[in-house]
Image 1 (cartoon, rainbow, N blue to C red):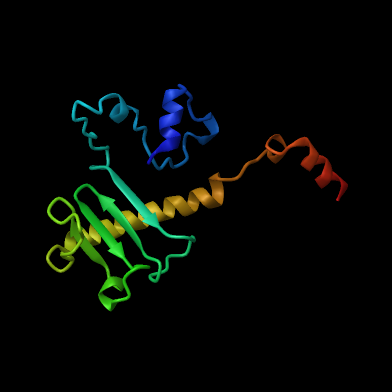
Image 2 (spheres, rainbow, N blue to C red):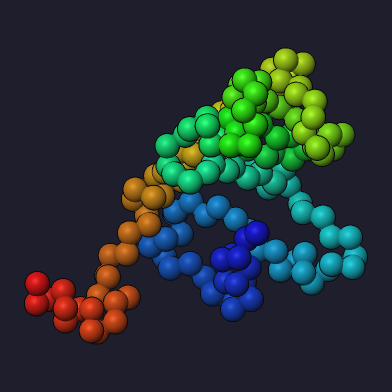
Length: 156
């Protein structure tokens, strides 16, 4: 769920100028909330259908925990925490329009789509890691800390 962009839109708040070039993983769901009874459907983005990447627990890609990428009707998955079968550790591709339960791996039937989603996932993952390294740093921590903590840190 895209809480930050939704709250920003509700409050009519823009991102600070220094952050507008940063990656922003999400979009406001306010149009969906306003039109819930009219069958609202997301419009595709400049990059194509709505997409989302995911990984679990830490920044290192680990097949025992898994990762994946959803792009429109397609979902790429690699690794798993819940499935111990060797097939679950290899790259998998699912068509969620016809297989919402992810039971039929189509990776051998559509290797070009699998490769495309793997590249999209890698691009997404790199942008998240770049954001963690370069953008997610508060430059003025004293503005965020309670005064009692600031004084404590000055004494040490």
